[in-house]
Structures are given as structure tokens and as C-alpha cells.
Image (cartoon, rainbow, N blue to C red; front, side, top):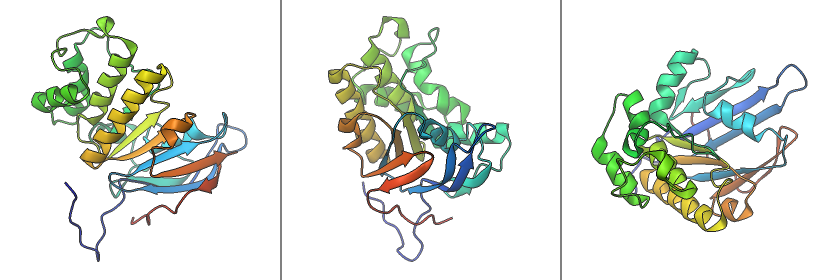
Length: 237
């Protein structure tokens, strides 16, 4: 359902970054990158290896902090928070999907999906079961990851990323380890669910088919934006 907003007071972006600069002891890997992603919007980030895509995603997810610039989740600046405070905010506001599923092998499918919601104090088993049904895994709640196929594991990861109703989802090559059929299925599920939930998505991918499904594409080269197809919404922060 489309949200009704006051045009005079537009909502803050789901995610915003302003003039990010970051390096690892040598020349900066990122050199003043800014972006903003609205609720329900999908932004694809492309670029060659070494262009700074993974570094950017780590900064956007609060897994590291920039040397310069700032990061906001749903209007709150988070790069200035300490590690523990960022982790608490991240559990409730950011869903993560990686190339490999990173499921906990000794937990059931349902328990894996519930982890982010539990960490944020919003555990909701009914929602977790509903998400599993949406990704085609109804009836597999008690299964352990070891009995699932690669495509099924990644679908569990998609459900897990959405379980705490995050404002933003960060996806790092989310279909990179899958065959074409499973990649298409997982991508369609991830983007459809994120848009329905109103979560902004930043998706790093080398797959042109996946990037083509995004609302906008940002291209990184040598740590700088060289192409941005349509301008992002205002930072609003």
C-alpha cells in the first residue's frame, strides 16, 4: 500500500551518505561518494573490482566508519555512534544479504530468520513464517540449513534480511553464487519483497540482468561516482 506523505515535510531517505572518504593506509578507496535511497527504491551499484563497491557497502551498513563524511539510516546519523550502538541500530534498521548465505548451521530455518528481529527486540515468529512462505519455504521451518539447496539457503537469507522490518537492505552480489534459474528467482523475491515492505535497497552486482531491475544505477570507478542514471532524492538530513 502506498504511503501518504506531506509534500511540505518529505520523509528522510531510508539511507543517505554524504561525501564519504575512506582508505586503508594508502590512497583513499572512496573519494567523496554521496548518495540517497528512498523507501521502496532500488539502487544498483556497479563498477570493476577494486573500484570501492564493497568498501562503500561496509560503510553504508555501519560495519566500518568513514574517515570523512557521514551515513544516515532513516534520518539518524550513525557513523558517529560507537560499535555497540551501531550494531543495535543495524539489527533493527538494516537487512544484509551477501553472496553466500551465512546461515547458522546448528539453527533451524525459522531460528535463522528470527535472528535480526530477536537482536532488535522485535521477535515475531508469525512474520518469520509468513516471509518463509513468501519465498517458497513454507513447511521447512524446522529444517536445518544442511538439507537445503543453495537456492533455498539464499531464499532463507532474503527472509532473514526482512524479518526485523528494516528501513534499508544492503545486498552484496546476492545471486553471485547461484545458477541462472535460482539467481532469477532469488532476485525477483528480494526486490519484490523489499518494495512491498517499503525498504530502500542498495545492491552491488556485476550481473547486468540484476542491475537492470533497479530504479537507478550508480557506477563507481576508482572510488568516485562516474555515472548516476537519474539524480537521487535530496538527502533530507
